[in-house]
Image (cartoon, rainbow, N blue to C red; front, side, top):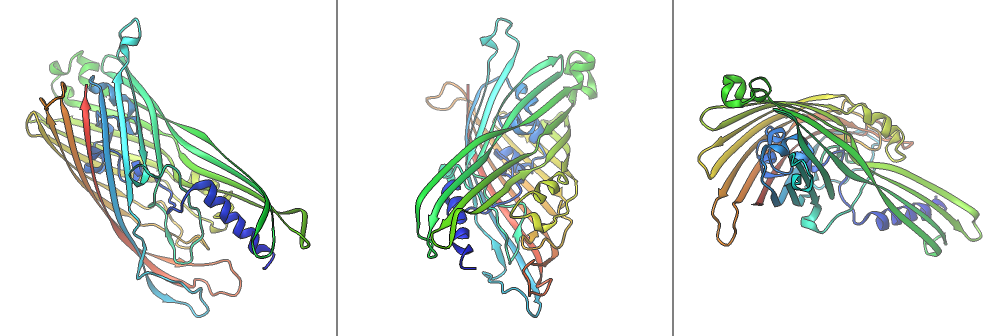
Length: 451
């Protein structure tokens, strides 16, 4: 045990140096867990497929074409979650678990978001509408761009909540045919690699160190198409009655993941000679599966938009990736694909003010109630949201309208029982039974300059 403790210490040092400060890891990202801009958060993502702002890059890039004006948006998001695991009893000979009450995670998510979209058609000779945009989010209100945690946990850890420090999407859209628009974007995540060669004594004091850290982008596609049925069948929405008020959207978001590989080679003079002990770690975090989305929008005559959407999230693909994860491979996680229904409502009160609301039901993709050592927890959740947008048409100083948005979201995690287990010898399994539940409160606001 004495021989290996310096190696474990060195591995921890590499992860800390390469990946910034500790953060709560999770198989999720802010855009899919909460939403990006206030309209997405306030409608529980029920209106995200039909949001004309730059967040369309992630949900439905084709919808960038619906508003020809350029926009520059700056937003803040604060998400407070209290995720709990109440013990139902500990087995004799079980693993000692230290808890702060029943709360496992109450670390907030605090993102600053900057986004822009514009029409680039003037750059071409054909003047065909061509829209470009980007959106980026950075954790801790802009102070944390890279952080990573992948760990086992005796007390349990929630699978879908945590910080996701860097969010980046770039893409564009154009009209394909009358009433049919298409769009595509690239979601960028990072694959980090670290290599450490060092000599150490049994006290963990190192010498002759060589550390090499690198990161490369991993690009995944977002592709979508949008249909305005009045234009498709009648050439103009105003002449097509019922169909003139109907739109549908189909979008595909490719799976994303943050992954890190660490290779360390340690020698201990007089104890472990060259080539030394090699420790390999290859692990992932912030995974999101392939997601297919289908949405239907209907416009009522009094300025009300109603949207229905359903997502298929293919979580089963993650099982194979976790089997190759050197930290989580013993967990034998069993997952299922899920369908997430969403509904959103927007009411345009007048030329300046609009209100939005939404709801969603997200089943848990986690089928296992035992995931040895890793001890994942996850529950079905109800999501409710409210939002508002105020457009100032003639703001002081500015020559173009200014839009202010706010959004609030509440998430309630249903109670669910899990059995905590370990692969360590000499312990009783399950060593503890817990009931997981919790809630999250999200508040976000943004300022948008139109040009």
